Image (spheres, rainbow, N blue to C red):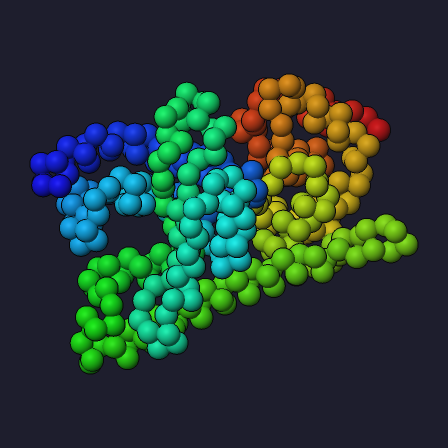
Length: 329
């Protein structure tokens, strides 16, 4: 194929691959959320024409659309090494996987290079029935999965323009090997920290004769507060990003876990009904929202500070009425 034919072939297929990429990005984000896998980014790119042409010439392809498997490329950047396996299971379940490559094992112990997991996939046959996937069932896409530190290393490697060991001046190799090793160690350390954090939260809950109890005598911090919210309000959605704001409010009003637990106990019989009245049918409370409702009902200083800062008029009116009834008792 001459350059003109290659370019014509490229432009003919670019639109469909772009459509595939955009739809797969949204699908992958949905799959990750559904499986409660936190992620940094999901991104996509369509191979540039110059790269497309170079690969055809280098590989000697005669059927490039079939042979070039990364025309449409997506990348998932996650936070922890254990997420890589969980994401692998999602991809295996949701797509027809043509090829799976784990590049973490492709390097010798002292070999420079970055690590990632690559998958060549096609959409499942049933997907093609949906309008946004129509006529895309035969197209391939490459999905790369990396931790955020693997991604950082790959970006630095690209910036330095070192693609293989032989590209690196001998004077620089030792330093690059050390940096690569440090990032790999850091990846493992962050995973260990996550595991220890989860173990710490579990350790705050004990069982006594079939009844689960929470150690409210613990120091107040982000993990102990989130663990308590998980224990006390398990049916409400988790919003850990908001837990830090709630922690600041606990500290500002000098409220300990023990004191907050007493507040919850004192109103546990009426709390579900109050919650139903303020939220109506249009929205639901997350854990932090329920915690703030408890503080509104039981903390005078917190209630006073909240004037004019309520999620809805119903919230203020219902709580005001309940507080008035408390004062009469």
